Length: 437
Image (cartoon, rainbow, N blue to C red; front, side):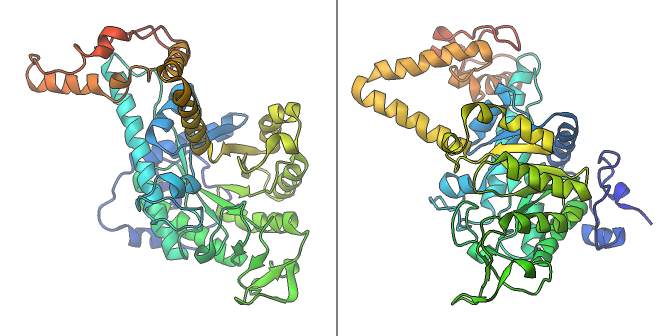
């Protein structure tokens, strides 16, 4: 009988130590079908992320809302990308609408953004490779937001598969009621029983096993600030439930002031079924972060932790600048190996465009020229999007055309473009300057 190490053959040694599965390898084999499809980007990203989480003090990521933002993150030297459901809801979903973070968008929207990001990274790799050799590994691991699974265990199974097919390295699931799901920093959150979330995590693990990849399962709890829970059926939740505290909808009320303890209890319950634990917090607090980490790692000393360095926090209103500067280093030392700013893409995109538009309204092309000069100045650090035609692959497709035509073509696009005539890439820290092809 084969074991899980052979069912996921390219996982690192010891990858599943301490992970519990309430099913057997034979159950996985029955669900695989007769043809095993390879998921190269998911597998490669998961292994790269796992390695970084165990070898680096911590891995910090920014939330990307577009493929081009992710490409700039890779170019700047980050080692992972966060894919936020909040940002998918706000500005990049398959419904083509703007929503708050309440799981109102179609369930395929976040996997589609994951696929789009990976396609952009693939194009960046192709461009650089065609110009003489890629100078970096463009395929950053993507940790993606599966919300509350958009339903129960079967929905969690399916969305995990969708993310794997799109190339995600890790996927997180939160323990809210899917039909009432809210952003972790909104009110009105309703938890599901601990055992119900364990089933969702198990469903996600099963999906990864069926796909044959070591995609990381992140378990998130929103118990710190949630006020409601669907049921008192799980005895592990009962110490935190108000007796006779029912709402008009039939939910049970949770006791005030017990959120951190409830997070710890849930973290301990989820740990055997997850690769990493994330407790959503209401404010940045190193003391509370340490309390959670020590409680979990006392029982599971090697368990990876994750922390949302949220833009919902007013950072300087909560902690001083020196503490902000060392915040991530301190978290990393506690075991919070994956740290991220969920809505970095949203805030960067909006403030950057507002700042440009405000200046452009008053000063016209002078404001735009200032932006362009900032771009030129950033080229020394590796930035290259000033040459926007090259950035999106014009030179690459010129090479495709030349290959098709045997090396003779009068219709290539980049050689006689204004960009080739007016924009010369300066030397960067990573590679010598290259003239536009």
